[in-house]
Image (cartoon, rainbow, N blue to C red; front, side):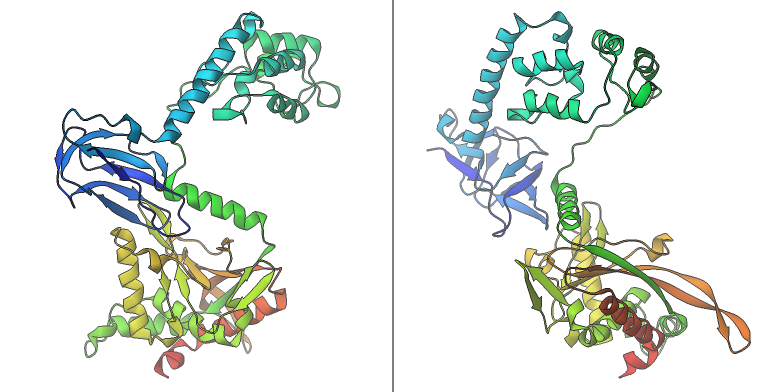
Length: 441
């Protein structure tokens, strides 16, 4: 009897997984426990094992597909066995919708103007008859409109939306645009921005016609990051405060650790480790910074679950140092490196990527002075770290150039006042300035 291999659920919040790579091909002999494929969530890469011995009769999806959890992705059985009842229904439903749309398009072709027969050549879901008629009336090329109907089908409301955001066209401009299939510029040269026929003709020159373009759909970790960043900016009042801290002691302590021949355990403690240690010592003085904001409720956390951004070939990951306030400097440094290496080697665990109460992201090693980090909701703050630069400081009657490290704190202004954010930065800059004393305590 044929057996389906399903896309496993990797955590309660995971709704779909990206199929990274098939390890076996259709027709291969497989054994129970053998790796069938690698799949990816927004957290990590996982291996999917065969649950039975047998022949891999079929693979229902291709590499790169984003597949809902608990969906059949492959089938194992004996050669010649039937298995159509195990084929995922979501695919069949799409095929039925596509067939219905194609039938409607065939009927529409018989009655619609010839000019639209080339529209959406690369979009096999087409344009609804009502959308075609309206686009003809409005002088809008449907081939340039994004559809919101089933499978991306262009429907009437899409044409209306496009018409509402476009500049009006002169009758001559409408005829030229429909005949040429070109798009209208955002603003015309006519009165009040009205688009004329000359605007259409001049915009038809494609200065990028010789460019080589690679198209890559956004998916996997990149899609998750994109969605979360947009959600963060849309659902919180973000304000970024920029400051800098005297890095003299920071640089001196890092140098002494690196050259310490008697205690080599500290040789690998770096600037980032020292900064994170300073943050851990500063957060308890500013409890509103170490909070989560959910459902109009502020959660104050006594323990500090410190997240830090790690750049990997798969995208940005943020591992978490749980209860980081209990770590000494050396243990903190070792844990940071363990988690960062696990991220880069695709060995990070799901539980090590969730639950942060505060996050640090460091772009200083890439030459960035300051920037605007985006909060990882439901956290209420995130610290961006810039590079170290010489800053002129007046000491008595003399100007000295003192190394300073850039700090950018983004706060959710719904929860944290500007003064509270500034107070945290003051405490942090003081901790950085005296990091040699702080680390010795």
